[in-house]
Amino acid sequence: MKVLLINGSPNEKGCTFTALNEAAGTLNQEGIESEIFWIGKKAIQGCIGCSKCWELGRCVFNDDVNKLASRLDEFDGFIFGSPVYYAGPAGSICAFLDRLFFSCDKTKLFNKPGACIVSCRRGGASASFDRLNKYFTITNMPIVSSHYWNQVHGNTPDEVRQDIEGLQTVRNLARNMAWLLKSIEAGKKAGIKAPELEEVHFTNFIR
Image (cartoon, rainbow, N blue to C red; front, side, top):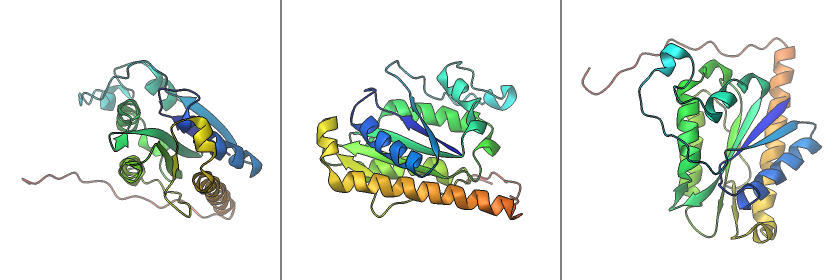
């Protein structure tokens, strides 16, 4: 079993990475493989709502979003990490995830556990945490929790490493992720099938 951790910070080895790396280390201790994927510093094109992905099976902008979408079968769980900018996640990770979730084959994400971790100096963590969790709740993905909201505080990696409670929250999150993945795997071996989903009927406020 393997978990993908997406580092949505423009700083490859900054505060967000420090938190994700703590989670990755705990996952590995629990016998779960992990990979940290950094979205980089380059500008990331946002979704333009063209819906061409429904025809092509991929996003029209051929970048790391498509590369990652082609690898989704490799992973059994996901953890998204982001710094807090103006009480919200970084725009780059939102652009990345908007396109990934809209354009990918959703069945490759169904029933796979997801979680997020946010890093902030002081405030805005809860709003950012809420925003990122919405990707899971619209994609039939169980959300993994911890004993507190998954946030770390600090202006530098060294300060994050001093956030004893924050890192403890991250480690407990990783343990819960490992437990859920093992439980799902045990259920499959016992013959428990994933739920059959009803066909989705899209409506709006005028019909």
